[in-house]
Amino acid sequence: MFEKYMLKMFNKKAGSEESRPGEIISHLDIRSGESIADVGSGGGYFTFRFAEEVGDRGHVYAVDVSAKNLGFIREEAKKRYLNGQLTLVLAEEGGTNLMDKSVDLVFSRNAFHHIENPVEYFRKLKRALRPEGRVVIIDNKKEKGLMSRLGHSSTEEEIVRSLENAGYRLERSFDFLDRQWFFVFSAAQ
Ligand SMILES: C[S@@+](CC[C@H](N)C(=O)[O-])C[C@H]1O[C@@H](n2cnc3c(N)ncnc32)[C@H](O)[C@@H]1O
Image (cartoon, rainbow, N blue to C red; front, side, top):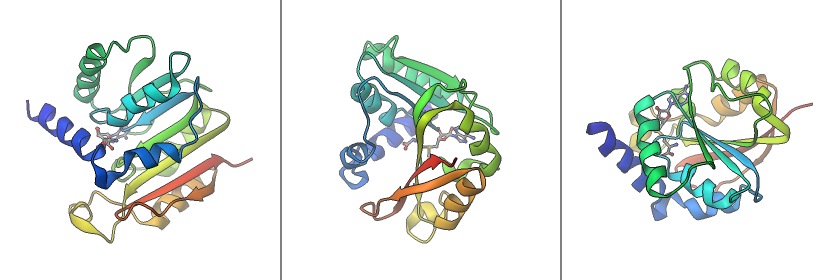
């Protein structure tokens, strides 16, 4: 019951004007037919937006350590008649359990700060990326707001250094989100 309330709150916040979801999606360069993993999918706000973006030929993986959260997404997906397009993946604390070469884009919003050993986590995740695959991390800025005071946040250095140490290259960053980092990485050659 409480989880359902929390997940609805996550979705409401993710879809709010302040979170600028439309702009986030427009900066991801998603192509129809792509496969996207939403890592730390929570209530699935972005999972469902991605399903619309990739279309019938594409695929979306909702990846989360919480079976309850994935159950909530399963119920929502039924209401939206999303069957073949969506796969739920129960992650472990230390890895996503995605199949090798299964995704073009890994998107993770407000989950990075939960990951205990991000270098190991993202090093393993490289195997799931297809050639030219990209990883997008959005997380609360440590120095700003309530989320920071609650510890649900990261510094720029924590994100960028972890991903670089895991074998990624920072390709782009966007600064239109006042309270969050928005980084795009590619797997370094
Ligand atoms: C604050 S919520 C963010 C939900 C959603 N991405 C959003 O933007 O609304 C963080 C989510 O990350 C999940 N999570 C925590 N640790 C994780 C891990 N190691 N791997 C995958 N998901 C994780 C939590 O269960 C939770 O659903």
